[in-house]
Amino acid sequence: MYEDYEPQEKLPRALLREVYDWVEAGMMAVVCVVLLFTFVVRLAGVEGDSMLPTLHHHDRLLITRLTMPARQGDIVVVTKPTSRGEPLIKRVIATEGQMVYIDFTSQTVMVDGEKLEEPYIAEPTALRYDMEFPQKVPEGCVFIMGDNRNNSWDSRSWEVGMVDERYILGKVIYRILPYDQMGKP
Image (cartoon, rainbow, N blue to C red; front, side, top):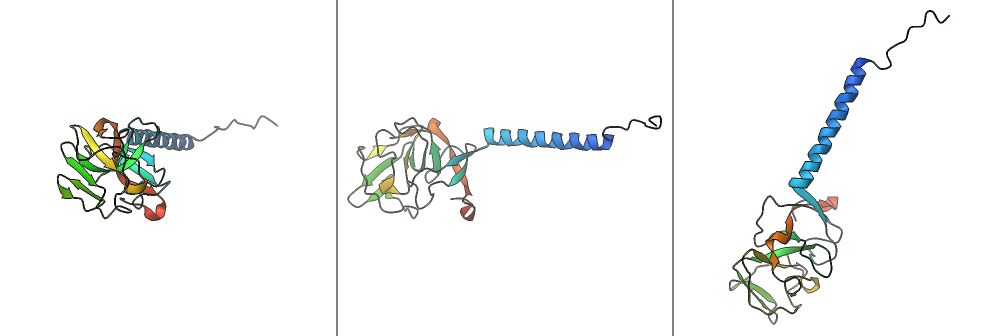
């Protein structure tokens, strides 16, 4: 009765090879994603309303350091230690060597004597912190402000002040969430 029984291979070689190829492809994909998110791009989340109307609470962003240094107008993620202990997402208003002046009476921001054209702001700049103007941006630093100027904690406060470029985690290159607003902010 058992004499006719011959053990069969547990799995055919072709199936084993196929499984191995899939595992290898999956491992390579994981390695590529880890390298991509370690050296090329990172994810950042917007917390709060300081960048309205450009960015909204809970937006998810891709940032990179590959396109550094930051230039005037770039949106950056800053990790400078502050009492709030959270990264800041703000717009670069001025870079090293530039002179910043905010006229709170006319609610205008000027860099090197020229009024900035700022179609991206929620409303004119009325909120004053403890920094006096004009201010010259030191070497290796940037001056940052939120687009929602009257609801933004930024370089107008001495605690944030001029931000050393070494604290810039990266520049925002793409909004990935929400899906209906994907794209360059």
